[in-house]
Length: 361
Image (cartoon, helix red, strand yellow):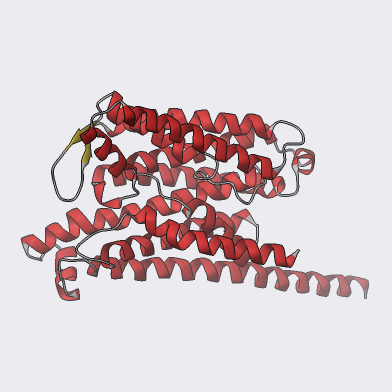
């Protein structure tokens, strides 16, 4: 009888576990399907009118020259950049929130994004990696994206190092970590202003315009670099998913389970900073995606990083793709900065999540 009761209990536990994981998988599949729908809508949306038949013909290589240029040289790189950058920033925010045990941690709140922007301004203005153009779509052309990325990464890693040092101080509260991020944001913004102060007026206008989050400046080369980096980071984070789950229970618990906390934390912050620096160097500052996407998914599917990491990546892609489509169509043919749209939607939503969180307490 005892063996039968034990077997029945095990079966019941397995059923509960399968239901637990099944819901999370359904959410992930729904998000993936939503990305496909948004991508289809984004391909058809824009100031250049294309019907679905023309879009399909262009995708198959049978469209007119004009429609093929619009689809393959303008809209498709932009859509893929939105998907990859949104996923990368969201995953970076998810890992930062886990590594620092702070729900407000993200590339833009911890000073990483503004540090990367500071480095990018150095490369564009001081080192001459940006050239001025008079086209109607862009005011600055990055003729050496690798130099911009290198400078952005170096500065973002400096900010990350400061955060890691502060996180190692005993008694440094999560609220103090956010205040440290605010201080770093102010520091690097001040440095950016000083660089722009000694630049010419045209260079200042170009650098300021570049700082706006804009997906229209990327080409296939930048999309490929960003996609390769995001795929690498995604695989790395999934490989460390059990360590992140252990860290959710506290450092002492993670150490007792054999997790090398310092190494895991440094590796996660390093890869997260790399994603943020490359995304900022190519696209400019895009706020709230890395902050809000993991928070949304954590409330929907919980804190299991086996599912939270891919779900956060998909939600980041959804938010970015939706915001970019709104930016392109709201006042067409004028294209708004996608960074302004993500902040416009992200800030109220984040405040709502904060209020809900405190009400539950």
